[in-house]
Amino acid sequence: MNTPVITALATWVPDPIPLSRWRAIESALRASGHPGWDAWMRSWHPDYGHWLEAWPGEESAESLPVHCDLPPPDMTCAVPVETETDLSGLAAKVANVICAARPRSARPVDVVMFCHSSPDEHVSATIAGRLCAEVGTPCFPFSLSQQCGVSPFTALRLASDLFVAEPDAHTILVVAAEKWRPPFSRICAPGIVHGDAAGALLVERTDPRASGWQLLDAAARHIPVDIYGRAGGPPDARTFTLLSMIESLLARHGLRHGEIDEVVGHPGIPSLTDAVCDLLGRPDTGVQHEHCVHLGAAESFVRLAHTLTRAACCRTRRVLLWGHGMGGFVGTALLEAHGSPHLYQHDDIRSIS
Image (cartoon, rainbow, N blue to C red):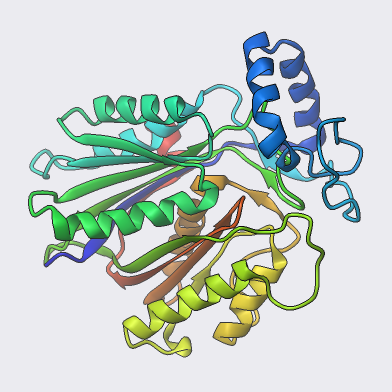
């Protein structure tokens, strides 16, 4: 059998602080920034800088006005900020807790995938290499970036395909981590503030004894979007594509809308949440509109962990994950419960780190 099973999940979300406090920290970091970063940012800004100045009053002379009709962010909102550990350390935290808990007789990890949002590919490749060393056995590491919150969906799709294409691959570790600091802004899209977090999934080839969530399907797409568009009007290409992907996954597995027990989505874009709610005929998909703190590549893993903690008191059998990323990325995955994966969250990780 080639069906992947998620047998373990670990997440780390640091303590939140008010956004106003972060802005004070950010100002100090910018003042002490390396001049090389400033030069790199100037070269990068003409094509992508408008994503960084997403709020009125923050545009520079080189940037384009973005969503000038939107209110400024709520400075009292709480955002998770990691102040002690770097991005590499965050990724290692969640990877190590999963690897340390595995029995000695378990198969070694064959592939490590690292997901995050930095446009700097050297950072991604370096951390993927560290994760390979942390695992402690020979494995193939690589990174997935620039898809933001959607890169984990691409990773799950790749994991599923690798189990078909590579008969000798049995265990894949998918790690996602985010840490935002200058020259990148936490307010990088209208209505969304990015937080720090990390998450990891252990995906294993189907074993009759394995307990966890089967990965039935996963998909990710990129659709160019108009970031200057206004709310309202007909569904945009991103919404249409996400709904089409969900319909396709359900049809491929012979499932009706009512056979999905739990829907887990990303915050920040109410139109996407509303569209998924309408499609599946339910009033709530578990996304809180009023809290638009997005954890980037770690978002889906953290929300999946929250779903697992609730599953003990409800009969959840099938879960539909969906997410979005800056630049028009959307992704979705379909999971089916066959027992519960091992779950390690903030306190579990803190106790052994």
